[in-house]
Image: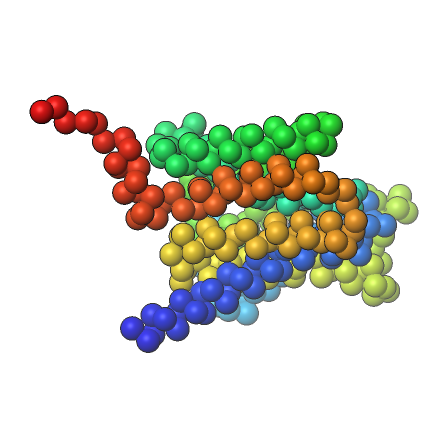
Length: 311
């Protein structure tokens, strides 16, 4: 019993650490605001691959990674799913970097708030999963909140929707492939390095590269992009193995909450009372969604949908 509690506590520590790091990630990209987003993305891919490869070698898991990669290579459908997952992930990364460095951190937080709902919606549409009564109510509330925000922004919040959709699709494709998170990300970054490295060679050739081997602060930050990408994932993987899904579900809102506070309080992005009201409706929907799988809500739903018995 004590061992289980200790394992849970460690799991919470790992998961909270991952979400804290993801939450403060905008600060890191802001330090690279003078670098074109495509260059940041290409370095992020390349150095993340180098970091993950080193991690596999140090932990002695490279042989397992290689065997799994060879198995996937012999299965065209799995390989295609990995390729599509890599594409969606990099669209997500590129959109996030661009949004942060163009003063749209509040929208990025919205994207990751509604991401769980988008994931469930994709599960319903593609995997034919069922939606509970409370989940349906959560969708309606979140939809009202997003529509209200659209009116507040004066334009469709495409950044938030694109981030939520691409990350939701990434999770969907990862589910169909069924490989370890670190192995999967290593393979995905390996595949996208085939585009990132030639691009970096090209910008270096034309003289517009922001990276140099003189170890300037910019170069060190670009190298560090690999570590700040992979470290939260390693912590997240360790945490989710030790925690029930509902605990992970609650903890996942740490990251967008930190990003929202950074956007409003540190980088002074617009956030009116109207924005607050819209976010409050979305938060209510998310709270309902998170509670929908707990026993009290399941019992309430059974009572509501239970057909009347004739006398």
